[in-house]
Image 1 (spheres, rainbow, N blue to C red):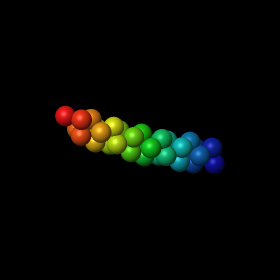
Image 2: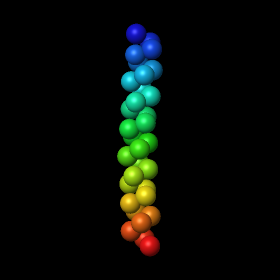
Image 3: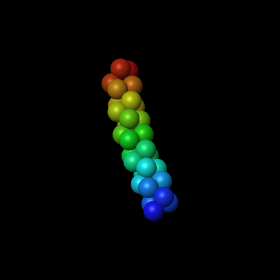
Image 4: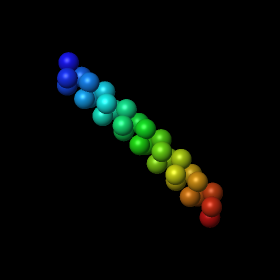
Length: 32
């Protein structure tokens, strides 16, 4: 049960981090 919670939290963090990174890269490319 705890392992499932940690695994779900890890996936959520990875998805959110990837989304933020993509948005940041898109904004950086727009500036140049």
